[in-house]
Image (cartoon, rainbow, N blue to C red; front, side, top):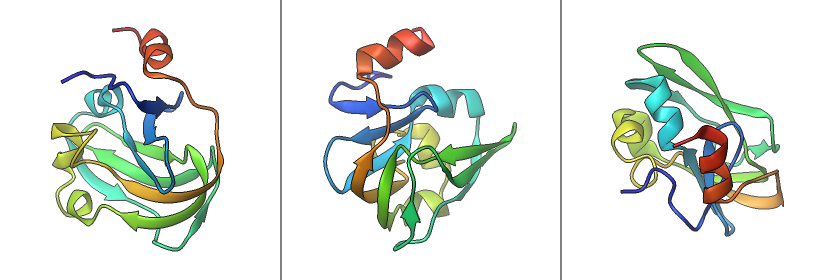
Length: 123
């Protein structure tokens, strides 16, 4: 599996999102790899309004606690309860079962293509 799937958008803060509304949001392979074993997720509540570039949660790993930034402005319509219950899903399948939230997008933030993101982080 590619660490930089085509068809997704990426942020400088290492989040990925789908190009649709509601957008599915998660962290990239690069981010989960740097974090190490993820042990806890704090995600925004369904119904909350989030703003592009703002902190919307935390990801705790055995190494550190990192902030989760929203790539878009909008309303949270779903969170991944499976990932909250089993945060290791974010390590094992960051682009699939380890997604974090779905957002009804009102405004997109700055994003990159897979190629641009890959050049930013190196391969």
